[in-house]
View 1 (cartoon, one colour):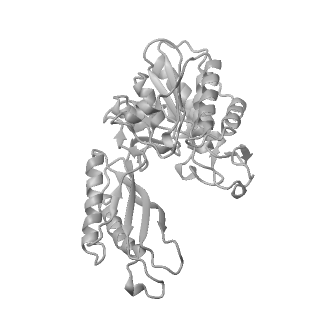
View 2 (cartoon, rainbow, N blue to C red):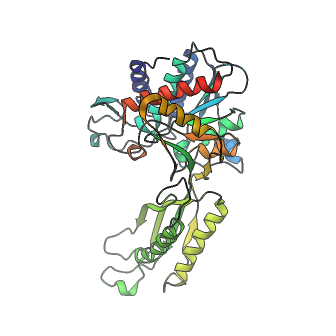
View 3 (cartoon, helix red, strand yellow):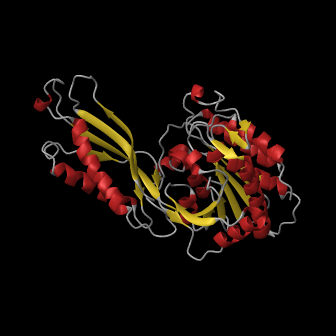
Length: 403
């Protein structure tokens, strides 16, 4: 089973050149590329247009944070019957920011330097997608007794629409490995998260007379302190395999005021609230809202002008590999046999599509090239050796599972 690094380089350059930011037409183009590529490897491909209205109407819809008018699914299967293994990767990426902030001034062109590839999505997670494709190419002549499947999906970054639709279409497997960047770790559990929107009112007045008004910014600082205390309490003693601060609270956007010399009478803060394993969305929302209400009740202005909390955007449940499932040991053994050393088993603080496969009864873990710290960053990069090593691991896992 030879892994051809030149073909990986070609595939990655082609896929990164498709600027498949969530909600753009390029998401469609990326799925068209994967469908053609998988068909070229001899896989039987299901490439279908998603009925977005029908999916959004379902009570278990995972949510969206971007607008979409068109979206496609793509699954390639090596033969008839239920696949013994599914390899999953998402083709959507986050916005690249300003091109001039990138070293090569073009985030959609793969740059190679010092043993690494640079470009938007090379780590999260087009490097993983092309490693899956390389593995499928490498086992093309292997006498497999059972099929394997490749699921490429859209919408992972903003809720998980693509995997949600893929599972609803009936695509299943005995086990699944997601090629998310894991920095040579095997991730068997994910925390969940919710997107919150907090609106706080104040009373406007001239900036020279703040004592005659009530600043929404000052009121928010009071509520924010209470929320940070809640987060610290919830993260004090995380269970294995999670590490420090696995389900944090963070504020990503704050908007307030419309004039520099006016006390602002409205503030809107949006962020993410971590969801613990075994915790329902309703329970997580309730404890957040109770904390906001309790903080407001102790504030001289907010006790008469209660903040408003809503929950827009993606809804990521927690998920994990079932206790005692052999998939983690199997992947760990193959990683060690590849000569790259033992891989630690851990949990991740971010949501992913792992929870959707797990909820469907499919044992799932994450193992892929790159480090999550590189994801979404300017000059995003991935080690070439890591991509090749992961492709080798996937190929060996296909043979082990399907022979």
